[in-house]
Length: 458
Image 1 (cartoon, one colour):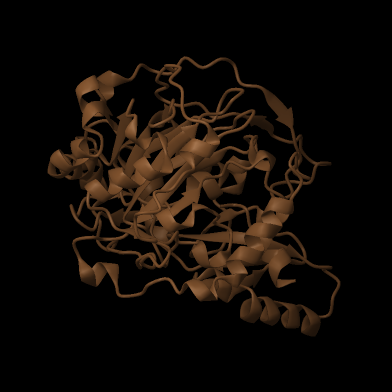
Image 2: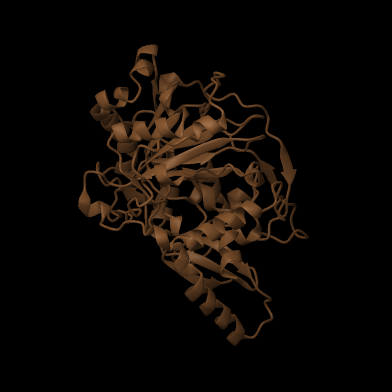
């Protein structure tokens, strides 16, 4: 029961870009279990979200899998990397109107750094020579798109890049759940969501964080773009979204705060109270601790009889950046709100469907607020045409990321990083590799899932 429950928690420079000109999206019909019964209202359409900018593809080629996956065995094993650091919260007393004015002054995210022939000839030395500039620009822009670099076409080269920048790898915030699979464990490289079963699942904007743990930075690398189309990597500036949102919506969400449910367990609603409480206690004691999150088990938060939901603690949708002190939109509502998931391509089964609630009443966010979050967020998405060797370096407290649907095979990966210049923020926890049996069992079970999975909601 422990493994089965955990295994299905799947839900996890302006001038350089031209505004998106996207073809009319396809849509299908689906039934929502949350808003109204199908007998009362027509199911909402599933429509692929748009983006503010869509850079063109350039057709650059990569290496064969046996080449790009090759690790440099002369380098030390990084599997005993740092634990993901605790989330740095500083959200009290934000002046919303002032914060929006300041956020509106920020430059377009991401900054594009394109490799010249001379840059490529330098290899990792390019990053060593430009380390201070790159780290400074990351703080200014929130994300940097390294485009056309040959070095990062392989696992070994990608590692050379982030080591030259002095970045210090850490675990994924959800590593303890077992849902994060390594592409190359000794290189601290996780596989992104490339599974065939989730090709047609749109991953909304989110920070790689929970209320408890947040990686400081991330480097997303493309080794193989989707062979049959799609699979753009999405990035948006949390400052731009904050500046864009209607002030009244932002103030309401900030004052009420939010809570996010991360999984569902549907049990027969007719069970006696003592039986329901027994199941709740069992899940709370046996399963929840595996996720290293502060969770509360709550029955029927979304109104579905018999549904037990694992809900994170209350959090502010706005947080000050730990280094700059600038308030930004820092939350996962665009990805996790059920009313948005029900209206776009989604391949997650009901057990993994998430929801976002107002923390004060535990009512799901209204459709009006969800639509405003969608509008403001998607206006500022840059849907990157990442090709082999491209890396998106992200300040995880500033920029949000996601992924569009794709066809064929795709191989992207990511390394998370802790605070390399602040030991107090980093903490002193390191991964205990020998206690990783649960994670390996979950990953093996995930690989057994059907390759052409279709959600019961579609």
